[in-house]
Length: 127
Image (cartoon, rainbow, N blue to C red):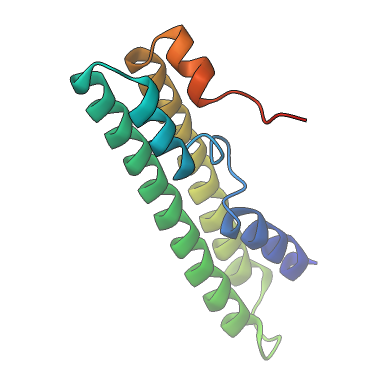
């Protein structure tokens, strides 16, 4: 049961399915470059997007390593709950940290972009 929970968390985090992950997609860089005219704000927005992507990538790598360590510890099914719980706790801490970082980045972008720029960059996909 713990394995299923950890693998679920791994796939969620491994796929960047974290809060804000779509907002920080590389494709948004080109839209920022097109719509933000002020060079200083454009540079800051691009820096924020890049930093957010880097944080998400680092979280994904940490969770992947933790998942591999978990699987190794659980391989012979001799590890007790306390040993395995440490891995689950670590993944949860990474998730919480990643969500906080993503929210911080979203608010940083809100400070840099005007309302019209935000709408242009983060418009919902056309149906």
